[in-house]
Image (cartoon, rainbow, N blue to C red; front, top):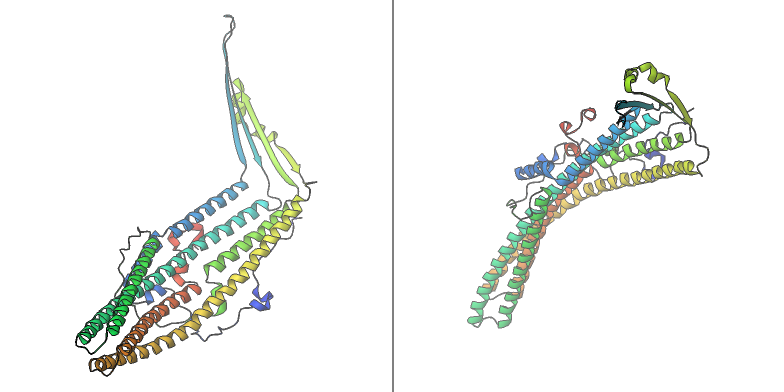
Length: 455
């Protein structure tokens, strides 16, 4: 009798520490998340960049190649259901020294076949395991697409942020140049001392240093994005002049929902199921195997018998082999396969917990980042008003240069933080969609898959 099959289905309920909750800890909309989340951002350039990356990115191309390899391995496993047939042939010529004995030519051909009946289901198990690995490789393609879509979106928003910060640094340089001209006039008039001029010059130099640093950051992100698009990293991508508005969050689904949506979790489940079959195969290696072999041959004038099927059938030989002593190798292999499955299960549980962590963190950040942006808008408005007032008082001689420089620094800092907060909200939304499984960007286009995987 065949050993009992090993059924593998990750049951998180078996471990109370990772039992899926009914709802998220952080309050969130109950509706399901949008599938085409990239197009929820009002940014046509972003949509074009993501579409280009999904076509051209090398990581996605490599994932497709791995899928092709898995399909080929599956075909190899399926071939074991059929008998193997081989042919042999020979030609020999004999030349006689005696003229009274004619030369002769001998032709021989042979045919042999072998087949192993699938009594214990070994062949079927191998095929099933290969099919699961193919499915997992297909889901890996979806995971690669999702990862690249998320990376492109986050890098694009980072590039726009870098441009806005660079523009802010340029305005800061212009502000300090204006302050320097004003201070130099006051110094020439004897109203201010040389220390005031030096303070403004120091602030101007710092502004120029900040600008250089942000220009470098913008160039780095442009090149990084070009590599994601499989373009030469020439820093030729120009960022938009402003960040898009953050779209409304329609919904996130439930904690159990992402278990059926995240490519990494689904692929892990398929591989655990395949590993369960490997355990079955290791157990079946203890059972005897039966093989059938047959052959036929003919030579010279008897070639007609070569095509005699009855002769081939009559030569069939059955062979039975069974393991007797392997030094514990076969049972050790069972232990090995079971240990691999335990490792995969623990990794899966960890991946599920990290998936929950990603979503909870992104949901919590949604609210805190909104609060931060609102507070920074107030800070910018107040800092700008204070700077305007202090600049006028400095011209009137009622405020010191230190007070003016401090006001300018506060306003510039608040503006920079506001730009970064807006970008962070957009990037956090991308992280949330990726953590939820990515919708359409966590799938594989049906026309990109072999027919048997399109259902």
